[in-house]
Figure 1 (cartoon, helix red, strand yellow):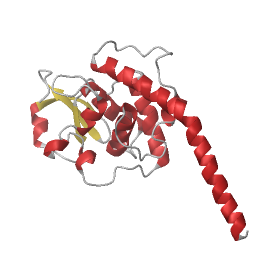
Figure 2 (cartoon, one colour; figure 1 turned 90 degrees about the vertical axis):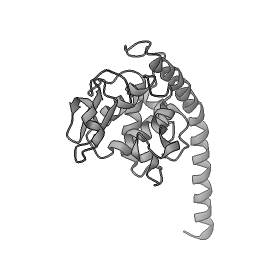
Figure 3 (tube, one colour; figure 1 turned 60 degrees about the vertical axis):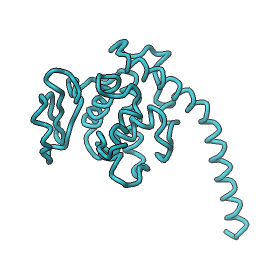
Length: 206
């Protein structure tokens, strides 16, 4: 293929990408609008029942958000999915779901913020992040597309209130290979292959 042929292919690829992005824009907007409403209801602890079909985020909608894993962390889906990805990528799906449950359990709970991005970023101002990946100084862009696609679908189910809480209300967790001093102050609620989950004995966050 000559130079003109390569140039033509490049132009076609760029145009196709632009058209795809344009087509996805309204789907992305719909997903983010639904996510904001679902986030507010979760923070207010309005109901534990699954979201009605009209309010629920669909698989197609969630994948239109942050498609390459490099968007700013400023919407509920991206913040939740990126946290699931970085805390539990490479782990079994139930463990990724458990991380999602911890974020959702914190949302609106006494001692925690009332929006997902603030929950994920909590402590960053004092370099004592609740979720270590947010303060580790490394790039936050996604590295494995398949893992992130799964993380976004788990985030969708969590926002839709379609996940079983395998942590039994946990607000904290750590890898089973570490032994943080704070763990002695809390009650264990669940164990998985890689994580141990906790909540305060009296229900209050610290």
